[in-house]
Length: 468
Image 1 (cartoon, rainbow, N blue to C red):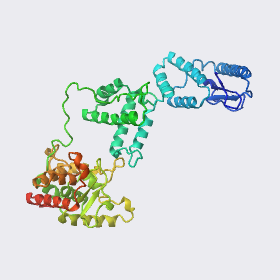
Image 2 (tube, helix red, strand yellow; image 1 turned 30 degrees about the horizontal axis):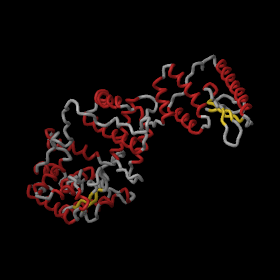
Image 3 (tube, rainbow, N blue to C red; image 1 turned 120 degrees about the vertical axis):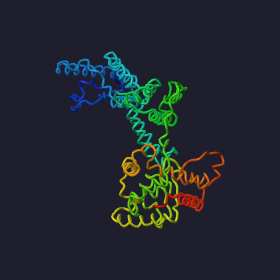
Image 4 (cartoon, rainbow, N blue to C red; image 1 turned 90 degrees about the horizontal axis):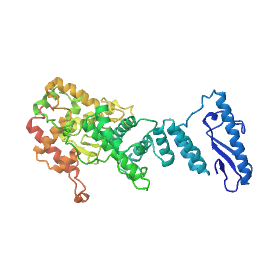
């Protein structure tokens, strides 16, 4: 029954979508402005009478519409339906609540046909996908995805690291720019568009390196896997999950393998470490202390730079790394006795200087600012690059970096004969996994201290600690 609805036990109601030209003008039946929908009780339960009144109301609406168009000098003539994403969501809600779905769909399809004939075919298809197939906007989907992949989520999903979540948002910005239009949806991404995005848009238009393009593909593959399998947003007409458009296809032309970020990096020699530490010969400076701790523990400098005091033992005997991309990266780091004095001295000094800082915000290296978006002490690496060039020369570029302290520690650990499992547990690396791993509950602190002590002795024997 077009433009008629009859709730159970009640009389008939006239209902229709308000013509665009009337929205906001005075409704003669209520005295208020017309909204998106006209709804008027007819005061009868008799079908024939309801039909008569419906035709009368419809005629009045058309008359008002005609008068308004003439008053506007026909400026509204030929005006098409609002095809924005918000409008599509409103129509979607209307279809979900109406008692006259056929009538609503009849009006809507007529409007969409008119818009398509006016040259808006692509916008019409996107609009119809949202209204009739429940298409989900990519921006809304990624917001929910990051929420469901957050720490402590109730679904048991592996939480994303903060930097990975930021990378997902960066990837989606590129994808939305590529797709264009108002609020592109998950359903807009076809295998062909995914291919064009990977093979042309990112490397040619944006100018990204192959390794970065592959990283974006991996992130998109994960997002779509969640949308297809866990949320069932993307299904065929038969109700079956669609194929993930970001899945890698059969291998094509071989490509030059991208070098890993640390490939080509070298360990420091004892002489190079001596020169670097010579510039900060006294304990207590943020620069000298962080280099010494990076050398002695094998930790990443940004891990040390971001350490909060509550994760450091007051006596300097060790500290916890509470965050990391993997479970292995979250670990306890023992500190050898000769280095404990340095760490304990720093704890005492910075505790005194941060009396006015809340306990949960006190840091071991408060002078190294943290980048708000990642929580990392990026300024350490920036400072070290300048300092390393000044001390070791520009010829050390590409060969040595702040991360070379970690290379040095790892190389020395092997030369000291430390067992591989201890090296990996101290360094936060994940080893090969097998079924027996579930029976292994890790090393005790004394085992880790023994490994760290052996590395320290090897450092000493090779002359790395002459200026420590």
